[in-house]
Image (cartoon, rainbow, N blue to C red; front, side, top):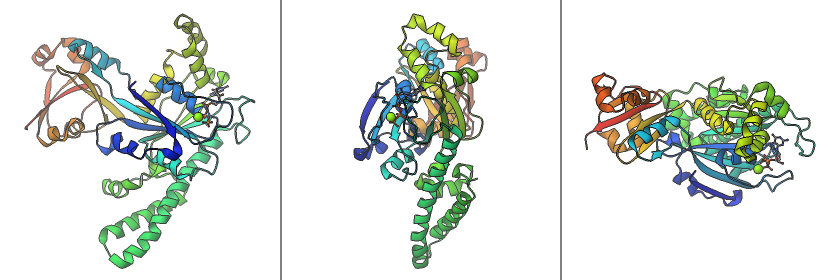
Length: 385
Ligand SMILES: Nc1nc2c(ncn2[C@@H]2O[C@H](COP(=O)(O)OP(=O)(O)OP(=O)(O)O)[C@@H](O)[C@H]2O)c(=O)[nH]1
Ligand SMILES: [Mg+2]
């Protein structure tokens, strides 16, 4: 755990985005996940569970403009073992969590709230399934499927409005300037508008690489990976047994019980096993660890490692990335001067107890720029300076 800051939405610092560039902007910083949802779904409780913070949770209506953020380490037992071997400190990959606060139905158009969603590399929509007559839900009765559909509609509506506004502007500019790029943008935005009108989110649109680049600046909300996280109660969680893994590309539904996790965390260590068994939770930090695994899966991310005298470090890349892309995560100079990558799986390395024996056995491979880095590989880049 490294930093935590809290603030009010109306004074959300704009430089937050500059300091912690999201993963996909090709900077090696933390991935940003924004937790959002209707009032009283357990967002802050989830945030606290994930970050081990103690932000106030409340039964009663809050002002609706509070947000929280924290950057946490991505736990990785493989990295721990490698760090122990090299006797260097492990440097974990990072995730930044934003708790965007409550948003009422139809109010998503609030611009500062939207900004917190736009910053995210992935969105976590916390959906209420737990029953508790003392905690009012704006839309009785409790209905997770309805809320998921309604929130997805909100995201699509915001994107539609963004496109509509830009098209109005383009209509004027295209006539005046007759620039090819503007015409291309106009054509693509019209297609996206039609797609949204068919009720489909933009994450389902088959963007070509060129099209993706053309609209990247809009940070469309319905194009972002979405995790619908259903906050269940004691009865439902027993049926499903915890968090469910991703089922489809870039959108998934998972289930957990925030309150149970919190109670478990609050128990003395020796009392946890009985409680865990009762609810079928394999670990008392289950939500924390499984949530991160689920997020990595949802966003199609993997880790590779660099090892050395000073530190043993985990890096996050998109699954399918080349060695060339991976080298750029570390430093643009390494990417520019890329010669070869020396690659070995973390398991083989530890089995051989070092590079020398791994080399003898032919397990340390030399790979070129195009090589696809796999999860859990140690990569050493050779490069010209
Ligand atoms: N019974 C039950 N209560 C829960 C559960 N999760 C959260 N709560 C309760 O719901 C209330 C609201 O929790 P918060 O974490 O503050 O919810 P929130 O979504 O952050 O609320 P707002 O930010 O005001 O929208 C608290 O009293 C929690 O104890 C759950 O799984 N079961
Ligand atoms: Mg809250």
